[in-house]
Image 1: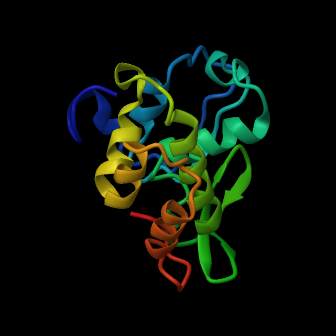
Image 2: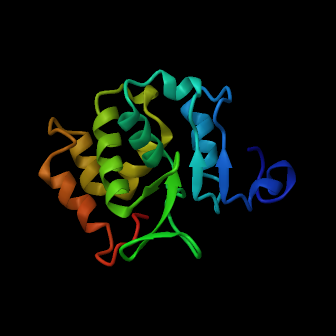
Image 3: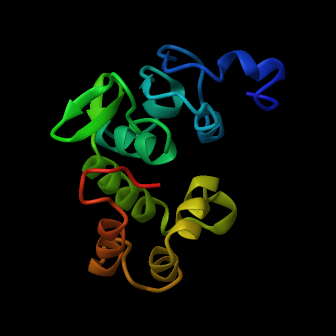
Length: 163
């Protein structure tokens, strides 16, 4: 998605739902580009080379959710679970608690990667959460209670999403 709101990408800025199943999507950079679509809430992304290379469906889903902060943010007319409005990934609703768990998984999944191999989203999450950044630079596992407490504190008790 080159450019900003105008230009070639401008036509896509209003997309709310997108299906990319069966395409040649093969890198997380391509997925990260979808995060630049501000209104995107529902994504179907199955049978693509990038996800086929991952071990299981749960890993695929958690990495997708963590990579896409805009998907599942909810909005008017969205599906509701309790008091939380949800978007969807591959047809399944994404709640605030699932997003929190996906971020935990994402940080742990990439914790052992060398710096040049880390996705940009990893660095963005660490900038947003100083406790997570401290844990990522230490020998503590990313799933430690300090990281969990930090992420729990960032979820609005009324069911809001992470920033």
